Image (cartoon, rainbow, N blue to C red):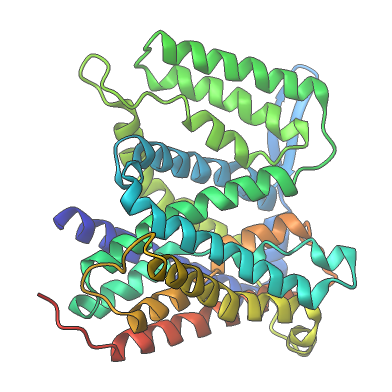
Length: 386
Protein backbone atom coordinates (compact mmCIF):
# COMPACT_ATOMS: atom_id res chain seq x y z
CA UNK A 1 0.00 0.00 0.00
CA UNK A 2 2.86 2.38 0.81
CA UNK A 3 4.37 1.77 -2.64
CA UNK A 4 1.02 2.52 -4.28
CA UNK A 5 0.66 5.76 -2.31
CA UNK A 6 4.19 6.81 -3.24
CA UNK A 7 3.44 6.14 -6.91
CA UNK A 8 0.24 8.17 -6.72
CA UNK A 9 2.05 11.12 -5.19
CA UNK A 10 4.78 10.92 -7.82
CA UNK A 11 2.27 10.87 -10.69
CA UNK A 12 0.19 13.62 -9.07
CA UNK A 13 3.25 15.89 -9.15
CA UNK A 14 3.68 14.95 -12.81
CA UNK A 15 0.10 15.99 -13.50
CA UNK A 16 0.62 19.34 -11.78
CA UNK A 17 3.78 20.00 -13.81
CA UNK A 18 2.01 19.14 -17.07
CA UNK A 19 -0.83 21.53 -16.19
CA UNK A 20 1.70 24.25 -15.33
CA UNK A 21 3.58 23.71 -18.61
CA UNK A 22 0.30 23.81 -20.54
CA UNK A 23 -0.68 27.11 -18.94
CA UNK A 24 2.76 28.58 -19.71
CA UNK A 25 2.45 27.46 -23.35
CA UNK A 26 -0.98 29.10 -23.63
CA UNK A 27 0.39 32.31 -22.11
CA UNK A 28 3.32 32.35 -24.52
CA UNK A 29 1.12 31.74 -27.57
CA UNK A 30 -1.45 34.37 -26.62
CA UNK A 31 0.70 37.27 -25.42
CA UNK A 32 3.59 39.34 -26.73
CA UNK A 33 5.72 36.22 -26.30
CA UNK A 34 4.08 34.47 -29.26
CA UNK A 35 6.90 35.24 -31.74
CA UNK A 36 9.54 34.10 -29.26
CA UNK A 37 7.59 30.89 -28.54
CA UNK A 38 7.10 29.95 -32.19
CA UNK A 39 10.66 30.80 -33.15
CA UNK A 40 11.87 28.63 -30.27
CA UNK A 41 9.87 25.66 -31.54
CA UNK A 42 11.22 26.15 -35.07
CA UNK A 43 14.86 26.46 -33.96
CA UNK A 44 16.84 23.69 -35.65
CA UNK A 45 19.60 21.62 -34.14
CA UNK A 46 21.10 18.18 -34.61
CA UNK A 47 24.28 16.27 -35.27
CA UNK A 48 26.52 15.44 -38.22
CA UNK A 49 28.55 12.23 -38.63
CA UNK A 50 30.51 12.31 -41.88
CA UNK A 51 27.99 12.78 -44.67
CA UNK A 52 25.08 11.73 -42.48
CA UNK A 53 23.20 14.38 -40.54
CA UNK A 54 20.02 14.68 -38.51
CA UNK A 55 18.76 18.25 -38.28
CA UNK A 56 15.34 18.90 -36.76
CA UNK A 57 13.41 21.75 -35.11
CA UNK A 58 13.05 21.59 -31.35
CA UNK A 59 9.39 20.60 -31.67
CA UNK A 60 10.31 17.39 -33.52
CA UNK A 61 13.26 16.64 -31.26
CA UNK A 62 10.79 16.59 -28.39
CA UNK A 63 8.10 14.59 -30.20
CA UNK A 64 10.48 12.11 -31.87
CA UNK A 65 13.36 12.06 -29.39
CA UNK A 66 12.17 12.70 -25.85
CA UNK A 67 8.96 10.77 -26.44
CA UNK A 68 11.03 7.77 -27.52
CA UNK A 69 12.57 7.84 -24.03
CA UNK A 70 9.06 8.08 -22.58
CA UNK A 71 7.93 5.02 -24.54
CA UNK A 72 11.12 3.21 -23.52
CA UNK A 73 10.09 3.70 -19.89
CA UNK A 74 6.58 2.49 -20.72
CA UNK A 75 8.09 -0.60 -22.29
CA UNK A 76 10.09 -1.34 -19.14
CA UNK A 77 6.96 -1.04 -17.03
CA UNK A 78 4.94 -3.28 -19.35
CA UNK A 79 7.67 -5.94 -19.38
CA UNK A 80 7.96 -5.94 -15.59
CA UNK A 81 4.20 -6.13 -15.03
CA UNK A 82 3.77 -8.98 -17.54
CA UNK A 83 6.71 -10.98 -16.20
CA UNK A 84 6.39 -10.56 -12.43
CA UNK A 85 3.69 -7.95 -11.76
CA UNK A 86 -0.06 -7.65 -11.76
CA UNK A 87 -0.42 -8.53 -15.44
CA UNK A 88 1.15 -11.92 -14.76
CA UNK A 89 -2.01 -13.02 -12.94
CA UNK A 90 -4.84 -13.95 -15.37
CA UNK A 91 -7.60 -13.19 -12.85
CA UNK A 92 -6.39 -9.62 -12.45
CA UNK A 93 -5.74 -9.08 -16.16
CA UNK A 94 -9.25 -9.81 -17.47
CA UNK A 95 -11.05 -6.66 -16.30
CA UNK A 96 -8.45 -4.03 -17.33
CA UNK A 97 -7.89 -5.80 -20.68
CA UNK A 98 -11.59 -5.95 -21.52
CA UNK A 99 -12.21 -2.44 -20.19
CA UNK A 100 -9.16 -1.15 -22.07
CA UNK A 101 -10.44 -2.61 -25.34
CA UNK A 102 -13.75 -0.84 -24.80
CA UNK A 103 -11.85 2.38 -24.11
CA UNK A 104 -10.27 2.13 -27.57
CA UNK A 105 -13.13 0.77 -29.67
CA UNK A 106 -16.00 3.06 -28.61
CA UNK A 107 -14.20 6.47 -28.78
CA UNK A 108 -12.64 5.59 -32.14
CA UNK A 109 -16.07 4.64 -33.54
CA UNK A 110 -17.53 7.91 -32.28
CA UNK A 111 -14.70 9.87 -33.90
CA UNK A 112 -15.14 8.04 -37.21
CA UNK A 113 -18.91 8.69 -37.07
CA UNK A 114 -18.17 12.43 -37.10
CA UNK A 115 -15.35 12.40 -39.67
CA UNK A 116 -15.99 9.53 -42.12
CA UNK A 117 -16.79 11.94 -44.96
CA UNK A 118 -13.14 13.03 -45.34
CA UNK A 119 -10.13 10.63 -45.43
CA UNK A 120 -7.81 13.23 -43.94
CA UNK A 121 -10.11 13.95 -41.01
CA UNK A 122 -10.45 10.22 -40.24
CA UNK A 123 -6.67 9.94 -39.74
CA UNK A 124 -7.14 11.26 -36.20
CA UNK A 125 -9.39 8.38 -35.10
CA UNK A 126 -6.91 7.33 -32.38
CA UNK A 127 -6.77 10.76 -30.70
CA UNK A 128 -9.57 10.05 -28.18
CA UNK A 129 -8.38 6.50 -27.42
CA UNK A 130 -5.44 7.43 -25.17
CA UNK A 131 -5.46 8.67 -21.58
CA UNK A 132 -3.21 10.69 -19.29
CA UNK A 133 -2.80 8.55 -16.20
CA UNK A 134 -0.87 11.22 -14.28
CA UNK A 135 -3.90 13.53 -14.23
CA UNK A 136 -6.29 10.73 -13.27
CA UNK A 137 -4.07 9.49 -10.46
CA UNK A 138 -3.66 13.03 -9.19
CA UNK A 139 -7.43 13.42 -8.88
CA UNK A 140 -7.71 10.06 -7.11
CA UNK A 141 -5.06 11.25 -4.66
CA UNK A 142 -7.10 14.38 -3.93
CA UNK A 143 -10.15 12.21 -3.19
CA UNK A 144 -8.21 10.22 -0.61
CA UNK A 145 -10.08 7.45 1.21
CA UNK A 146 -13.25 8.04 -0.80
CA UNK A 147 -11.70 5.85 -3.46
CA UNK A 148 -10.85 2.25 -2.48
CA UNK A 149 -7.26 1.10 -3.14
CA UNK A 150 -8.52 -1.64 -5.48
CA UNK A 151 -9.96 1.00 -7.82
CA UNK A 152 -6.65 2.85 -7.91
CA UNK A 153 -4.86 -0.40 -8.75
CA UNK A 154 -7.38 -1.02 -11.53
CA UNK A 155 -6.58 2.39 -12.99
CA UNK A 156 -2.86 1.60 -12.97
CA UNK A 157 -3.46 -1.71 -14.76
CA UNK A 158 -5.84 -0.02 -17.20
CA UNK A 159 -3.13 2.57 -17.92
CA UNK A 160 -0.69 -0.20 -18.86
CA UNK A 161 -3.25 -1.75 -21.25
CA UNK A 162 -3.90 1.74 -22.63
CA UNK A 163 -0.17 2.18 -23.26
CA UNK A 164 0.06 -1.17 -25.04
CA UNK A 165 -2.85 -0.19 -27.30
CA UNK A 166 -1.21 3.17 -28.04
CA UNK A 167 2.05 1.49 -29.03
CA UNK A 168 0.27 -0.96 -31.35
CA UNK A 169 -1.81 1.83 -32.92
CA UNK A 170 1.24 4.02 -33.61
CA UNK A 171 3.25 1.12 -35.02
CA UNK A 172 0.49 -0.13 -37.34
CA UNK A 173 -1.55 2.91 -38.33
CA UNK A 174 0.88 5.83 -38.15
CA UNK A 175 3.76 4.48 -40.17
CA UNK A 176 4.87 6.33 -43.30
CA UNK A 177 6.66 5.18 -46.44
CA UNK A 178 9.21 2.56 -45.40
CA UNK A 179 12.94 2.54 -46.14
CA UNK A 180 14.27 -1.02 -46.49
CA UNK A 181 17.87 -0.04 -45.74
CA UNK A 182 16.88 1.77 -42.53
CA UNK A 183 14.79 -1.24 -41.47
CA UNK A 184 17.81 -3.49 -42.07
CA UNK A 185 19.85 -1.20 -39.81
CA UNK A 186 17.12 -1.40 -37.18
CA UNK A 187 17.36 -5.18 -37.50
CA UNK A 188 21.11 -4.99 -36.86
CA UNK A 189 20.47 -3.00 -33.69
CA UNK A 190 17.81 -5.55 -32.76
CA UNK A 191 20.34 -8.39 -33.06
CA UNK A 192 22.98 -6.47 -31.09
CA UNK A 193 20.60 -5.90 -28.19
CA UNK A 194 19.48 -9.54 -28.30
CA UNK A 195 23.10 -10.67 -28.08
CA UNK A 196 23.76 -8.32 -25.15
CA UNK A 197 20.75 -9.82 -23.39
CA UNK A 198 21.80 -13.43 -24.11
CA UNK A 199 25.35 -12.76 -22.91
CA UNK A 200 23.86 -11.18 -19.77
CA UNK A 201 25.78 -7.95 -20.15
CA UNK A 202 24.90 -5.77 -17.15
CA UNK A 203 26.32 -2.45 -18.36
CA UNK A 204 23.45 -0.06 -19.32
CA UNK A 205 25.78 1.99 -21.56
CA UNK A 206 26.00 -0.82 -24.13
CA UNK A 207 22.22 -1.09 -24.31
CA UNK A 208 21.82 2.68 -24.58
CA UNK A 209 24.32 2.85 -27.43
CA UNK A 210 22.52 0.08 -29.35
CA UNK A 211 19.19 1.70 -28.52
CA UNK A 212 20.36 5.07 -29.87
CA UNK A 213 21.45 3.39 -33.10
CA UNK A 214 18.04 1.69 -33.28
CA UNK A 215 16.31 5.06 -32.75
CA UNK A 216 18.20 6.64 -35.67
CA UNK A 217 17.32 3.64 -37.86
CA UNK A 218 13.63 3.91 -36.97
CA UNK A 219 13.77 7.67 -37.54
CA UNK A 220 14.90 7.08 -41.11
CA UNK A 221 12.74 3.99 -41.72
CA UNK A 222 9.28 5.54 -41.84
CA UNK A 223 8.16 3.71 -38.69
CA UNK A 224 7.57 6.29 -35.96
CA UNK A 225 10.78 6.64 -33.97
CA UNK A 226 9.05 6.31 -30.59
CA UNK A 227 8.52 2.60 -31.35
CA UNK A 228 12.31 2.20 -31.04
CA UNK A 229 11.91 2.96 -27.35
CA UNK A 230 9.42 0.12 -26.88
CA UNK A 231 11.52 -2.37 -28.89
CA UNK A 232 14.71 -1.48 -27.01
CA UNK A 233 13.01 -1.94 -23.64
CA UNK A 234 12.24 -5.58 -24.45
CA UNK A 235 15.94 -6.46 -24.25
CA UNK A 236 16.72 -4.87 -20.89
CA UNK A 237 17.36 -7.77 -18.47
CA UNK A 238 14.78 -8.17 -15.73
CA UNK A 239 16.51 -10.84 -13.66
CA UNK A 240 19.48 -9.78 -11.52
CA UNK A 241 22.91 -10.06 -13.17
CA UNK A 242 25.75 -10.13 -10.65
CA UNK A 243 23.39 -8.63 -8.10
CA UNK A 244 22.27 -5.75 -10.34
CA UNK A 245 18.63 -5.58 -11.49
CA UNK A 246 19.16 -3.43 -14.55
CA UNK A 247 15.51 -2.99 -15.55
CA UNK A 248 14.49 -1.86 -12.07
CA UNK A 249 17.48 0.46 -11.83
CA UNK A 250 16.89 2.11 -15.21
CA UNK A 251 13.15 2.41 -14.59
CA UNK A 252 13.81 4.10 -11.25
CA UNK A 253 16.33 6.50 -12.82
CA UNK A 254 13.99 7.47 -15.66
CA UNK A 255 10.96 8.06 -13.45
CA UNK A 256 12.13 11.47 -12.30
CA UNK A 257 13.42 12.47 -15.75
CA UNK A 258 10.05 11.75 -17.32
CA UNK A 259 7.99 13.32 -14.52
CA UNK A 260 10.03 16.48 -14.04
CA UNK A 261 11.40 17.07 -17.53
CA UNK A 262 10.15 15.08 -20.52
CA UNK A 263 6.36 15.32 -20.03
CA UNK A 264 6.33 19.01 -18.93
CA UNK A 265 8.57 19.91 -21.90
CA UNK A 266 6.32 17.93 -24.23
CA UNK A 267 3.26 19.77 -22.90
CA UNK A 268 4.99 23.13 -23.26
CA UNK A 269 5.94 22.67 -26.92
CA UNK A 270 2.63 21.09 -27.98
CA UNK A 271 -0.04 22.91 -25.97
CA UNK A 272 0.64 26.41 -27.30
CA UNK A 273 -2.80 27.05 -28.78
CA UNK A 274 -3.92 30.41 -30.11
CA UNK A 275 -7.13 31.14 -28.21
CA UNK A 276 -8.85 33.21 -30.88
CA UNK A 277 -12.28 33.25 -32.49
CA UNK A 278 -11.17 30.89 -35.27
CA UNK A 279 -10.10 28.24 -32.77
CA UNK A 280 -13.37 28.43 -30.85
CA UNK A 281 -15.46 28.42 -34.02
CA UNK A 282 -13.45 25.42 -35.12
CA UNK A 283 -14.84 23.48 -32.17
CA UNK A 284 -17.87 22.83 -34.37
CA UNK A 285 -15.69 21.10 -36.96
CA UNK A 286 -16.30 17.31 -37.24
CA UNK A 287 -12.74 16.59 -36.08
CA UNK A 288 -13.16 18.71 -32.95
CA UNK A 289 -16.57 17.21 -32.21
CA UNK A 290 -15.18 13.72 -32.73
CA UNK A 291 -12.40 14.44 -30.22
CA UNK A 292 -14.71 15.98 -27.62
CA UNK A 293 -17.39 13.30 -27.79
CA UNK A 294 -14.78 10.55 -28.14
CA UNK A 295 -12.90 11.56 -24.99
CA UNK A 296 -15.84 12.82 -22.94
CA UNK A 297 -18.40 10.12 -23.82
CA UNK A 298 -16.69 7.33 -25.77
CA UNK A 299 -13.79 6.66 -23.40
CA UNK A 300 -15.78 6.35 -20.13
CA UNK A 301 -18.78 4.65 -21.72
CA UNK A 302 -16.59 2.18 -23.61
CA UNK A 303 -14.67 1.18 -20.49
CA UNK A 304 -17.81 1.01 -18.37
CA UNK A 305 -19.94 -1.03 -20.79
CA UNK A 306 -17.21 -3.53 -21.66
CA UNK A 307 -16.22 -3.92 -17.99
CA UNK A 308 -19.86 -4.20 -16.89
CA UNK A 309 -20.41 -6.98 -19.44
CA UNK A 310 -17.29 -8.80 -18.24
CA UNK A 311 -18.47 -8.63 -14.63
CA UNK A 312 -22.02 -9.76 -15.45
CA UNK A 313 -20.68 -12.62 -17.55
CA UNK A 314 -18.52 -13.58 -14.55
CA UNK A 315 -15.30 -13.18 -16.50
CA UNK A 316 -14.06 -10.90 -13.73
CA UNK A 317 -15.18 -9.12 -10.57
CA UNK A 318 -15.78 -5.50 -9.63
CA UNK A 319 -12.73 -4.15 -7.76
CA UNK A 320 -13.06 -4.88 -4.04
CA UNK A 321 -14.88 -2.22 -2.03
CA UNK A 322 -16.12 -0.28 -5.06
CA UNK A 323 -19.48 0.09 -6.76
CA UNK A 324 -20.57 0.79 -10.34
CA UNK A 325 -21.08 4.49 -9.68
CA UNK A 326 -17.45 4.84 -8.67
CA UNK A 327 -16.46 2.70 -11.62
CA UNK A 328 -18.26 5.12 -13.95
CA UNK A 329 -16.52 8.06 -12.29
CA UNK A 330 -13.17 6.40 -12.84
CA UNK A 331 -14.15 5.86 -16.48
CA UNK A 332 -14.62 9.61 -16.92
CA UNK A 333 -11.13 10.22 -15.54
CA UNK A 334 -9.77 8.11 -18.40
CA UNK A 335 -11.26 10.70 -20.74
CA UNK A 336 -8.44 13.03 -19.73
CA UNK A 337 -6.40 12.88 -22.94
CA UNK A 338 -4.23 15.99 -22.67
CA UNK A 339 -0.58 15.25 -23.47
CA UNK A 340 -1.03 11.75 -24.94
CA UNK A 341 -3.93 12.86 -27.15
CA UNK A 342 -1.87 15.85 -28.26
CA UNK A 343 0.92 13.44 -29.17
CA UNK A 344 -1.35 11.28 -31.34
CA UNK A 345 -2.79 14.46 -32.85
CA UNK A 346 0.68 15.65 -33.86
CA UNK A 347 1.36 12.31 -35.55
CA UNK A 348 -2.02 11.98 -37.25
CA UNK A 349 -2.12 15.47 -38.72
CA UNK A 350 1.63 16.19 -38.65
CA UNK A 351 0.95 19.50 -36.91
CA UNK A 352 -1.21 20.66 -39.82
CA UNK A 353 -2.68 24.13 -39.30
CA UNK A 354 -5.81 23.12 -41.22
CA UNK A 355 -7.89 23.10 -38.03
CA UNK A 356 -6.40 26.37 -36.68
CA UNK A 357 -5.67 24.82 -33.26
CA UNK A 358 -9.32 23.76 -32.85
CA UNK A 359 -8.32 20.08 -32.65
CA UNK A 360 -5.87 20.75 -29.81
CA UNK A 361 -8.33 23.08 -28.07
CA UNK A 362 -10.94 20.32 -28.27
CA UNK A 363 -8.51 17.95 -26.51
CA UNK A 364 -7.90 20.39 -23.65
CA UNK A 365 -11.60 21.23 -23.22
CA UNK A 366 -12.70 17.58 -23.27
CA UNK A 367 -9.92 16.65 -20.83
CA UNK A 368 -10.94 19.40 -18.39
CA UNK A 369 -14.61 18.42 -18.53
CA UNK A 370 -13.79 14.72 -18.13
CA UNK A 371 -11.64 15.51 -15.09
CA UNK A 372 -14.37 17.58 -13.45
CA UNK A 373 -17.16 15.07 -14.14
CA UNK A 374 -15.04 12.17 -12.93
CA UNK A 375 -14.07 14.03 -9.76
CA UNK A 376 -17.70 15.04 -9.10
CA UNK A 377 -19.03 11.49 -9.48
CA UNK A 378 -16.31 9.98 -7.31
CA UNK A 379 -16.67 12.77 -4.75
CA UNK A 380 -20.36 11.96 -4.31
CA UNK A 381 -20.14 8.18 -4.56
CA UNK A 382 -20.22 6.81 -1.04
CA UNK A 383 -18.81 3.40 -0.21
CA UNK A 384 -18.21 1.96 3.23
CA UNK A 385 -14.61 0.91 3.21
CA UNK A 386 -13.68 -2.00 5.45
